[in-house]
Image (cartoon, rainbow, N blue to C red):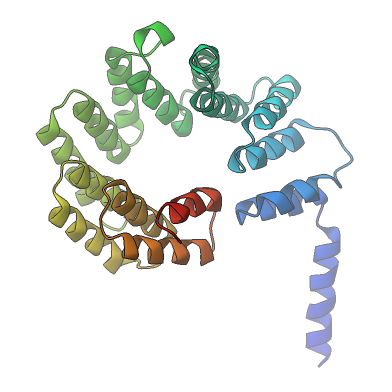
Length: 282
């Protein structure tokens, strides 16, 4: 009994000692973005960390203007932090996606500039490298994109992480309509990381986009045998089915399971799953 009381006292003491910023970080890690923002209201000290966490919450909630404003404050407070520039670039990238064509060009350029700044500050920032690769791959030359630039970044990715390097090479090959090469890179990534659900998802989505649905389903099934409750897998399968207008009843069930799952910031926000569910009458 005395042990139980002692442990209970310690638990209460630890909770009391937890700072509002730490609590906000914990809530963010659990994908409870609104609660995290509410916890930040109790933080009295202005700091780069405060603004960055607020920006990440706004980003996940789809409030990109407020996100970019928060990240701007973060980089002003700490101009040497690579991750703050990365997230600022991401928020501008989302604003570009949501804006009219004229405004989108300006936001896209700002996204690129901030990705490049993040990489200048930390050449080994893998997320910044990956985001800059995707930008170069998808953006036209007039906005600073280009396949040659993407190829150079893909080589850098390969040196830091050979598995991710295969994914980058696959994306590059797919963009150049070299589909056989793209598939081989994706399969090699699966071979090198046979327990990573994301590698199976990449391959399954690629096969579905090629109209090879039976093969895609087989790869999804292989991933399901590894972890049937993986949120990444649940969302990816549902998204693929809806995109190709097939197995919509299954997609609906997968999305409901996703919405009930414990998510992290690495998973798509629940709002995205809810939008998909609405498309299939869920």
